[in-house]
Image (tube, rainbow, N blue to C red):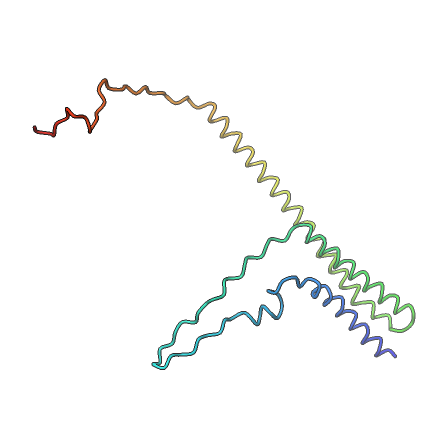
Length: 180
């Protein structure tokens, strides 16, 4: 009976890992298809022994779009709730007497490690927001200084252009060539 429960626990852990991966597959460029389409077919060598450079009909893959903050938070929340559900399941199975007490240890360690990583991630997010706020404040200060410097600078001197009385017209009838 205990080996069946152990197998069931292993399946449950893999389901916690694999189901989110399967749900996240939203494009054709992930997983196996990316590996299968990594290289285009190379043309065969010609009869005279010259090898041609392989043709590259495929375009370079599009750059990945940046991950938004909401996506990161949702991913963290899903992972935390999945690990908490795994811990509760292992506690319930142990409390019912089907498994030994040490079955609780891996989910506890996983959840504790995840919470420690979340704590570090929150610190990094706070530092990133603080650095961005400082950069915005420095940019505002530079813009204000540039505006004050432009206002304090001497105005440009306006020079009046003097127009000659006679305007040169190359098509005028009374013009002569040089030296005539």
